[in-house]
Image (tube, rainbow, N blue to C red; front, side):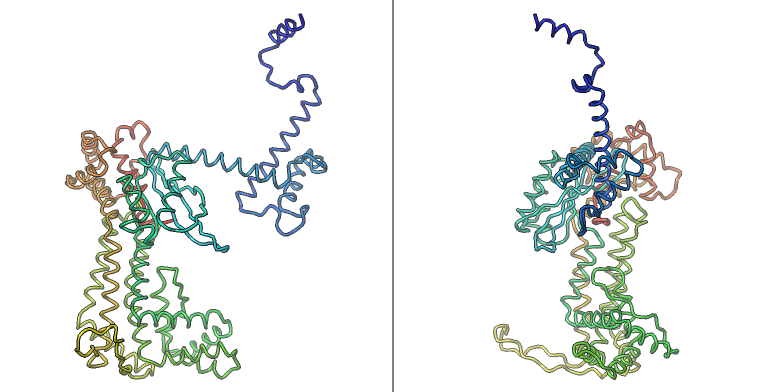
Length: 563
């Protein structure tokens, strides 16, 4: 009988009741629950704000003075119930355990949404890099770049892996584990972007090679700017005269820029040399790719001022280590070898810095005014300029100008270094070793060596298969918009991306795309992609295959690296 009455009571309950038993029986309980929920939402908003801004929760102060509690007390001015809540002894939900749990839930929710966006794009690029943190732990950072159907590009930070080592096999497993956890299909990967380290870009067993063997369309690219920087850096390290000149340049800038007293003294002496052009000393920063030539140029322009500065500094009371550094730089600046090295570095850097500034120009990024073909062209022009500098006439002009500079700076005459015999283990045959017949020939050899190293390094790093694929995609879109023959590029694109395109539909849509720009004159890459972005969803469906080309162009990274 009791069971039947209970069933009848349940059936007779209103269908719109969604509260719990406690709320149905007690109004006070219902109000308390609503208050607790509002307070918890305020706590969640605090946590989100502090995490979003990268602010510490507690800091080095007491709990009551921490950012977390003080922010809650500040919000209590607008939420009266929060003051009562903060005075509670228990169940305030402000403990570190609750904070960490809330942050973890937020992070998982964000990552689920990002994963959904990336999966919907059906087109992404893997970006990864490894480094050692301050605790000497190897960390592997993974990011994903994707392009939506509306042709909007996004880059998302996925996470940091703590790896035992940085071998290619370990890093590949970390990437595969990430793809598996987020349900990313490797068949949707269209690009890879790493640094130039052998474990990442090695042609035999590198990370890029291993993933490329599983998905042939996951094209590896190394950004132009970074590749150029590595090429120039390699040249400077391998050329002894350039390496020594850069070390001296770096030491000079440290002696002046890290000492306000010497900097003031330098400016005072510089102002007294009214007949000389002085732009001040520019800091030499090895990690900035576009100012190294200007730094060396500033040293050469102020060569006599610097020599006078060292003389005046040695008249003062200095720390023994600083005095030794100044004496060493003073001795180096009195030698012709340093002057030669600085002028040679300036000659190479001013050319490569100009290319680097162009490649890093934000207005000429992907989908900008500089296409892959344009970037390759100016890279080759730079290479040809360096190659043409390697001739007898150019060297003689360079050496004559250097001799005039040697006289004006009162530098020692060039001389032969002491001849050294090669170690027996390196000797081959009975012939005598090579020794320059004159001082000019000695420096000619070093001049040619530096130029050869620069040209070979730039050529090797710019001629990569990934660049050719990217260039084919851009040329296909540009030639179609400008009514030019694109048959070669079309076949190359279809050969690689055979599963991404329908050949008949792509050919048809490219013809229509050509007609759209038939009266527009010379169409740039930015204009073509901006037009596709401006289309409605229905119009994008009309140009579905052409939009896919634009999507591949935007998802691949050639000039933009970890922006």
